[in-house]
Image 1 (cartoon, rainbow, N blue to C red):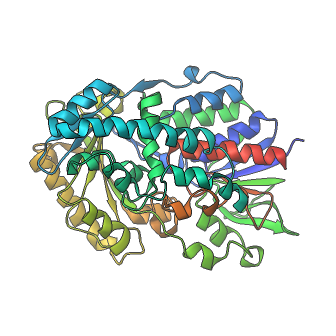
Image 2: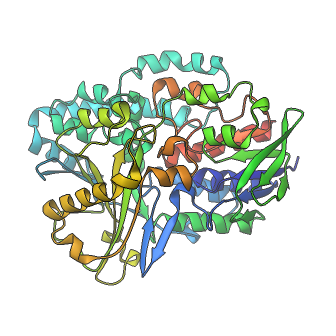
Image 3: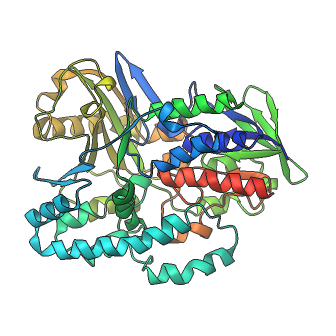
Length: 492
């Protein structure tokens, strides 16, 4: 039966859900508070530079193919994906690097260069991740966990796979060298998790990368957003920009539509929220309609770290300085720094960085002879006492000075364009609770059934997609949440 459906938020979860539902014949309206779609994948363009603010690493690219196939189209006709070579270059505190890519033999050589004794351990580690991948991604990622019995059904498998171990502890069972342990345990940070707390089920990312590779979109991740928006409108969807939701309207226990800040009302048989889950419940739904998802329940959860991101447009290139497209620069401390960020909520003087040179493999991202770069540093969310109105400038200068002294000589002299965001951006522009970068942390006790459900317990025709619901943050997880929502709406 055709429904009138309103989707709040045009991040990858909202766009994917909107396309899938429109392809099923529903009348779908997608509401976006900002001037263009994207959510966390918003794009900044200025003076010939293009900066992606969202995910830059594309794994499981077939999931985009599936979206286009659902709409009767070919993804290749809308945007181009290219493999990253290498996937990452990871640097220790002394500037020595470990290169990680798609060649298993080359990875073994890299490990042998650092610690020959870990070669066999790595082989065993990779062999063990296949079973985790088969269960955690292939079987469970697109399955809803609406009932506790759903969790109990898979509990024996989760125990057998030792998902109760942290990612770092699981990696450490196989890898002994301290720096190599960092190289094979950092992935939870890409989805807002602490490797020392996040479930070892996230070790499956290594197998995921081995299975389908790591890709980037030509023209930037923003080209995927633009292509999805175009596809959505081509199949009859309606995209409303500058349309900020102020209320999910509820009558007789069911949502009947969405009211905007400007007073407009969009009636709906079903509402899908791609907004942050705590924000949706606390700011858009009156307390009397939330007997299960109360403020107290939402506030009791543990939320991901936030981020500082500095976008730099440069009038020179750094191709000859050992940097590739995706660079991870570890500081001297690992566990201590992560403890400061996630547990002590303390802004440390030291940091670890993700340095993304988008123009390394795609010259279209910057003017000729220039570079579009962003450098990202995990920081505590706004539950910390840091006053970013005072701390931002100093933190920025420390990072720029560090890069200038160690990786990018004379960096300051070559900055043409600069833009910086800190936790206030995630709170104010993206409406995330505490300015978290990825909503709730991916802890075992906040995963699957324990994570906010894809269908609301309070309002049966309200659904959730995106980082804050099951299965979690990261592009594969967010796209999977849209598959779940589509199925649940079809079964309702």
